[in-house]
Image 1 (cartoon, rainbow, N blue to C red):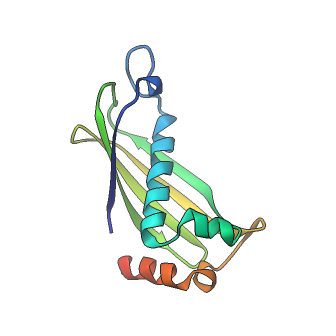
Image 2 (image 1 turned 90 degrees about the vertical axis):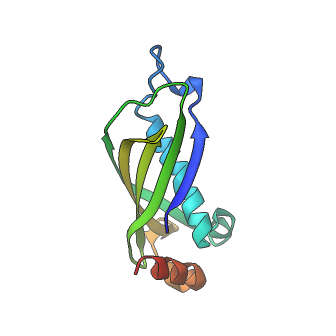
Length: 134
């Protein structure tokens, strides 16, 4: 499953030359991560009710082209690996149709600071994840 999240670059995300700051890409991927997990059924309201924290432990980025203001950005997100204790998501960021960056995150499912088996607590959502990653 590939999810797309599109939005306009905001002026405040840029430097004096109108180039988006590299740290903003991580924020864009965080928004895409929340959207992707929600679509799978790992809704943050339900996770919080179960005291589950999807803890980000890895963020890798490869910047390929500058994104400038004004522009339309699309983040394409897909699960590239998963287990009962973690999920790896890959992101491609497009600016006006051109690939600008590739990012990857690894999220560990935690509860009270310890990794947990998400399949035991949210089996339906885990089954949806397993089905799309075959």
